Image (cartoon, rainbow, N blue to C red; front, side, top):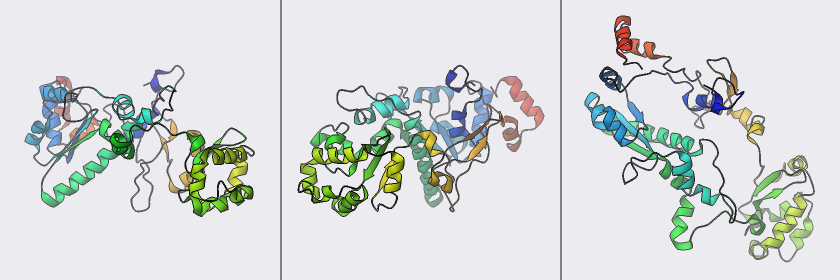
Length: 354
């Protein structure tokens, strides 16, 4: 598989390693009756069944919740959706760019008035949806262990996006839509972004404005701002926000990001530089916490891929194996299911294994 179909890209697709590393792969042709029977046989020994097929497809293939529960009444049935399990769009396909980024209001929130809407980062809400599904599965398994009830789980890209923008959506009916704020008039000038002399950016995140204002003025070499009657407390800084932001911007533009790293190293308020994805590979916290473990794919390519954000026992979640090739573990899984090689050959000859 060529990476995104781009000329000159490696044959392996490293993006496939992100969601699939450490898993095993089996191919089953659900259009064949013997393939569907094999799926149900696997389901009988499983805790969870997860699908993103649309309702009409699930019904056509005979893999809806009633079908799986007939094979295993205790299975947790999990559905990933674009637009939700109910309503007129339940059978409408929904990529995260459409259901999450566009319809979930993130594109609106991230676009300044008069500008074109921003494109979303790759798989942005797909990955958030996956994390939500993982948490939901854990909760459902715990509920089953405590109550004996196997539930159904539904997670949609639309709902994940709405959850991410909960404050804006909640306020919408009363205060109206809130586009991206104007940083040049930030009501708290030290919760804001500022450019540096080398065209880099940094964020100040000092929510307790009065607590950090005097210290910041000293650290950046502008004690005159602390004495300026327009900026002596948070109320006055809000009233004179444009002027305060302009003064801070002029100061931050006077030195490079490397200079500001040194100046702000011991500042007690929170701040951070804007980093590129490439720079994260060298971040001290990334290395210390094992957030970018190295992994070698089945094709022999080596990548550093982000680890799962969930850690247990204080250990990073390093992948145990690369993503499987298509159907790589088909025979292994079927042998574990009790099939012998003769039966596996029959299943393959019948087309059940795809």
